[in-house]
Length: 244
Image (tube, rainbow, N blue to C red; front, side, top):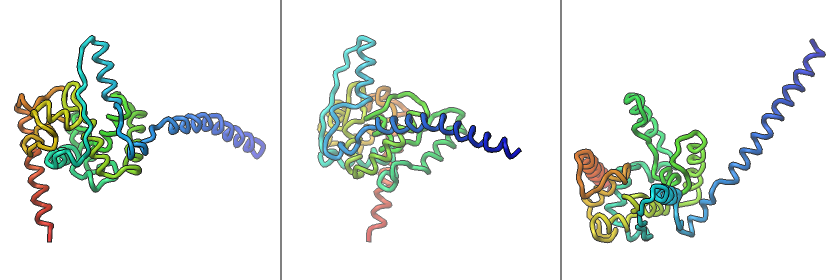
């Protein structure tokens, strides 16, 4: 009995070493390939994974989809659009650290009741991580990378910079990226001139930008637009009542 125990211990240690060492090397290599998001504090991206993916798909299908994209600072994006997008996509954006755990819980319960994946619960920071760096595949590895990039974005960038990046790379139609291109394409004006109503329409199409158009107001899109307006007014009213 005592003779066998050291053998078993050695076998266990060797098993851990044989399995654990390659996994450790793989994990370190994987972490080393994560993007340097700190550079985004000083430089704007010249493209995104989503843009590249859309262009590649269009090329394969032999379709011509000109890219409309103009980068502008957050100060030149209507405050109405900023508030509408936050209300629609991530109400707790300025208070969470990248993940809205309550939103994730509610989304999970909703999906469980619906019997399918209908709601994601992703924050603006998570969506930015996906748009900038990741593919559209749904896998545990991609979700893990998304979580790591999300935490890195929150660590290296201010909330204002994250919002500025998101509003400048978000997709707002086929080949239309960013608030400025969206405002000019859909409403014929700059992003700075958008009204609250127009901003709510743009925020309403974010979940399915290639499916919906704010000019062609479907029943589903109209309902979402009205909900966003109610959310924005509710947040504004709450903020006013808290002021001294």
